[in-house]
Length: 334
Image 1 (tube, helix red, strand yellow):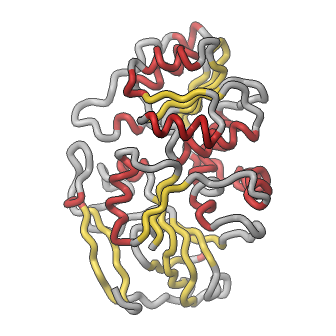
Image 2 (cartoon, rainbow, N blue to C red):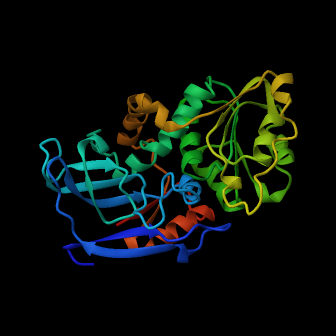
Image 3 (cartoon, one colour):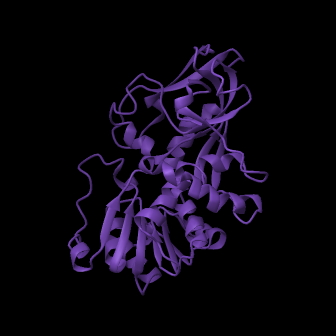
């Protein structure tokens, strides 16, 4: 790639089960000129997320042959709009490409939150990932100080953010599930979980019961299936589940997993199960900044990120994230 070209990733076919590299193509084209009312952005950091796997199945987000999308941080190179100036750092969703042309209504400046706040935080703890965790804990699960919490997929982007934020919010016993002993150790040794388990080691309900023998008050659930059933079983009366995803069924070659066998326990124990989309809670962004930014500045809080260097590795990073190779948020540095 030269300074006057851009590279874009496009999906060329629908996956059957787990995605493979041959489903993606890299295309090179001349660097576009910004139109009046737009700006040309050089992308610096790109996010690859579990929801991208779900988006691969339909035309709703990714039509075959069209550029793919994703949360991105970049720098304005050239602008035809006074609100976006050359040199500005901006957040937008024209990802999976080295450059993008954006309009002011599709981009916002990276806020100046002071020294010590790394750029990667804006796509992790301070970005959609952290906001998902914050909204799930505060608005959906309504976690109160001293309450016990279970987080599934706890070593991923949302899960690690949830662990960090739950500690700031005064959670009681904090339990997480993950996919390896190494990740379980990371959760307890680095983030502050009281207990964590590798879900491959046995039935999730038994592992959770052992890790939280007195039960839990709330759960941030992002796996579905057996994990959701285990959370329902472990919840005390009037427990709450914030349901943020179902990564456990994204690659299913057949029908999705059956509904939890203990679903009626929602009635018997007066449990509230609520799904949510973080896009409906943009008004919580400033709350998240107020909570997290001071801790980033003083060094008491750090974002959990795995960064792959080089745009040419974006597909590998995406597939690696789906395989669970990341600790925290998976990012690609262009």
